[in-house]
Length: 117
Image (cartoon, rainbow, N blue to C red; front, side, top):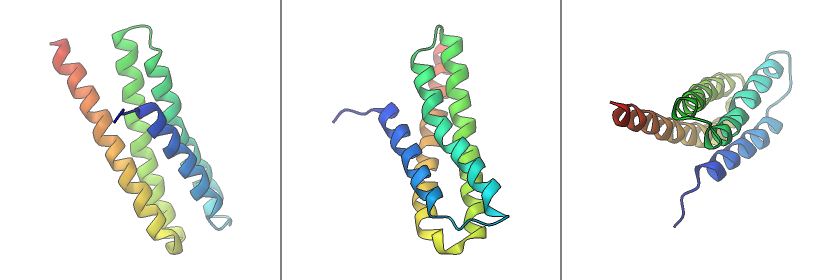
């Protein structure tokens, strides 16, 4: 089976967009939705940029941004789950995938650092 992280991060972004359309809109959730969508969709965009990096240093920097953005996504998922508890099952699934992606980006960074020394 071929493993395609670019496709996986794109599917994650699509699922974040879908989730965001199901969140009740009010004065509290509107800015949270915006933050979630920005962070959740930027992971894949930054991973695409990493794949086109001009150097190893540039690649590492983009992967580091991926990790930061996916961790931010985890934060917004947590906050949104408190604002709309009815979404808890869906948020748990998204949070699990975000955690898995965090582990992947952490491993990539560790491998890069190990191979640099």
